[in-house]
Image 1 (spheres, rainbow, N blue to C red):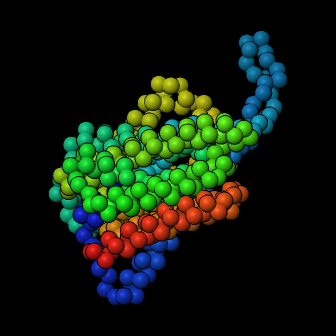
Image 2: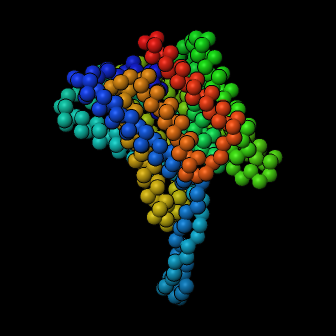
Image 3: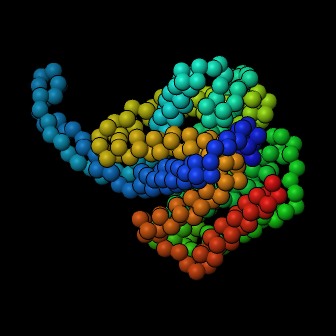
Length: 368
């Protein structure tokens, strides 16, 4: 996903004619972001943590040529574990959405190099090889995001994303040489403190916690995967920001190019490992799993379009506020649907994280 700080520089703010129009657009963006990403989160947890019933074909009679003459269906419950395949499906749908949007914008606006989301002219396109780096890091961050759910629960995964402010700051210093104020580091430490309170106060933040020692081993594994997710995700946003500033490309071009290379890399990896056909067989053996995978990808693609439109229309601060609220609602929704319990200390940790985020957003708004 594109980092909001860089995106703001690449979107010409759209000012609606009336306050009513602006209010309706804000409601539209709010509902679009919340519904697409909340539903995406629910489906993500469902696919990675619940059992699906798949139908398998069992031969009952073979002829002399060993060909199946007849057979029957048997049902079996399984957990779908192929995170890489989910990344591939997500990227295919996102690429199709971006491609359709580019084609429609070219036909509707009939202007070369025009971005309908930014309502501005795009002056150049980056060399295609430059997209490979952020495509690879984008794949790895998405893979880590799914893999983390094998070790920790969804609230832990969501809250960890709030902690990405620190790796983003450090990565921006490495990639772009950008320096940050002391207050930014104070906010980052406050968020990390809240996250630590949440993690170590509630043993149910890990999977299969029947044995306490094993739980903490799984917690360590989960935190390691989440740390990798934050690292790759931070690199992705900073590299994309660098491309935006250097080449003035449109968000749709970025979305299409990154997803195209992500498809190529993921497809190659799955094929080389021999995991593509088995994953397809499992997907098509369960109608419910097929529906969930398709809906997950649609929600992700629609969510990306709402991200671009919201930032271009209302700016980065409004977008960050909406998404911060989305994270809080995602934790609440996950606890309600999947029965996650939270201790008092865990609730205090969550409160510290989100209060810090809202204070940070308010101060940015006041400063601007």
